[in-house]
Image 1: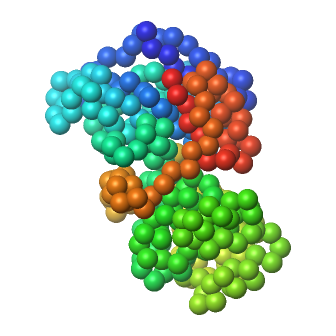
Image 2 (image 1 turned 60 degrees about the vertical axis):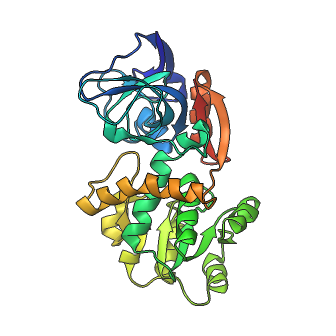
Length: 313
């Protein structure tokens, strides 16, 4: 038997159920992965609460990212063997002991990282990478990141620094030391934000990635950057067109262009390379057993997790 987290009605974290189901089998073109760790993303509780995704039809299993080992390979699947360690991305139902995936939903787990770290890769890394490529961040760019200590912000800081950009990142004071270690210039949000950013980057800001979605962040961005197509958000996508800015969403994707799909495909191999070079680090928050999925959702929903939240079957 396998264990999964699912829900049959929208609502608070209390609607999450831990249930036993038959161990899944791989059909043609599929694999079964035994999950060793699953990533908790904000989209998970937004779907559960009804904030995103519309009406619930039947039962929904939870989670899209994870890491584990291949335990079954279906007919027609080449290049994978039982025992291969993998990162699972954009699958369905990774809060589980086992999950069925297709080959395009897995990549090989970098040997240098743990299963818990691998489970932190998926949505945050692919979203950050796509956003930075869409914004045109390169060597010499001065980039402002609103929310540098969140999962997407953390990944964006490290990619941009690795590419030779100057990064200014907003965060609470308690996260400043870590952002400095990653190569960013931290500034505190709140009144006077524009002045603090200008002091940190007297050369001016070229691009902005908004990972918080507050009015303050957007207003500061408009004051600092004239061309609104050089500003992008991962939070307030519904307003993006009216505001004239770019938008990306990791867990409930906006329509992707062919180029954006290509960038997302590049993201995990890119981070694997940086990990092997010692230039990318994962900030793990609370690691809980699968039985505490509801508590993990409550922490994520609070908006102040101390790092990437992980569930372990």
